[in-house]
Image (cartoon, rainbow, N blue to C red):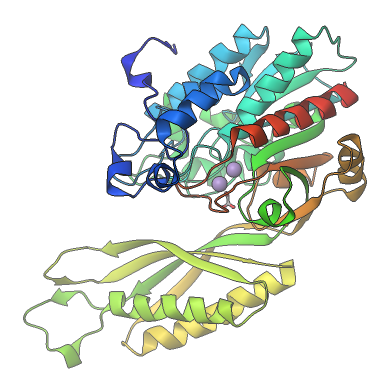
Length: 449
Ligand code: GLV
Ligand code: MN
Ligand code: MN
């Protein structure tokens, strides 16, 4: 059970980029270094969060899952910090008088009123990328709890059920598939395939689910849970510069780029680093380096395309060993489904050619795919009007709201991020903008309930 008095939850310099236990700020690898330089030291930011009772939730979890090696936070599905955040959520929600349940896929629902149908559901996720920021996910969860708490405290009696929803494994950091909780819920991933997914230690999703107290056989499409959602709203920190450029604190989302993940395996000949002349090598790591440049060049030549290799695994990975193979993961995104497919086809051809220069071969295997999401313009317009006319913005980042959008009316609210940086400890949101986001969400929920 979450215990606020536990020393581990110390909040010294916490908040995104605050100086955490890892002391990364001192080495300038943490957002705190940057903000301290501007006079926004972690302590001041923490005080601001605490002083604003509305954001106390962010302050409470600021010490959970700090990653001293990478900087920022590493909060991965059903591992220590994620379990701690889940316990924190349950306690927070119950303190508000909500009734919490865990669904078949590990998503948490905190209900105000009898569960569904036609419920107004809002929330986000608590897991992070490796070394991520404090706001991607948690801001939406904390804001949802705060907005619901305010409505309850002001005596609102909802005419329909309402729930705060925390999705499992949104980032796919442990099992590789982004938005896993919402994909499972909606049937967007085959349950057998999902059960067999493995983490870096070879633990399957089925095994991890069982350890977390779920029945692995019940993972998968949950039509009853889905049928309860009348409408879903996800508040999220903006992951770009749209709101900075507009000079506005809050926007409604219009669309999400098509995106997917592919595993790129480059195979060569493992050999001895000292005994193998340079001309006799088939080194897959050198070939992978060429392949990554080919990925970069292919995407850079196309308007609106984005392609990234952010993760590599060298096999076997020894200083005096020419590798035998390299696994790399490609994240590719573009303005339409066709453009994204075309981008990946061009990357495949460029990578094949690049690795051949080192006598190696490559295979590219799709691990996940999400088509372009166009949020319902009528709903976005309605929400924008209810907020007195806020801008609409597209995004290149994936979200559970995007997965749900194919099944239920869904919308997103973005809160300005003054760094314009995300999936990094430098991700940030000013207290005033977070409060503006909560007020916007409260207004929307009030109008919908
Ligand atoms: C999730 O944050 C994604 O866009 O990959
Ligand atoms: Mn993210
Ligand atoms: Mn997110």
